[in-house]
Image (tube, rainbow, N blue to C red; front, side):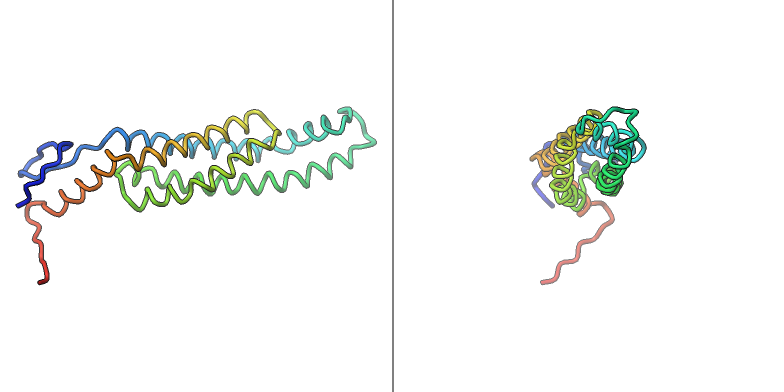
Length: 187
């Protein structure tokens, strides 16, 4: 019998303690969801409107009028080269966003492996987000990239708060001490 009773528990049927999920895990889950949605929205926006945004951007930078046919091939060549890079980054955003969506439930449950995966993905999200901020192609993409960076940082910080760690430890202990479960120790 253990004399340790965590303070964040509530009694459930059968005398077993079931830990109460802390608000930090809810915050981490919400921040992870915001990150994934902003990444997927940014990727979709880049893939759908990327060429026209790039075309306008290149024309503005080169000082070319919208109806000028003389420089049209130069603009089209520059747009296609830049769109390849924009498209590749959009596919990376989609990949990372899908992984983050798959992590939502395990992060909400406080699974350590999910928190570790989130922590490992965070630098990639931050770097790609900062790269998206420097593109200057669209303020919408810049805003979505900033939202992704801030929310992934919030998610990774809140998922490792002490309250979350206490919950994970208490949950592990409650699973070990469930009624009907025998513990075999080798001597």
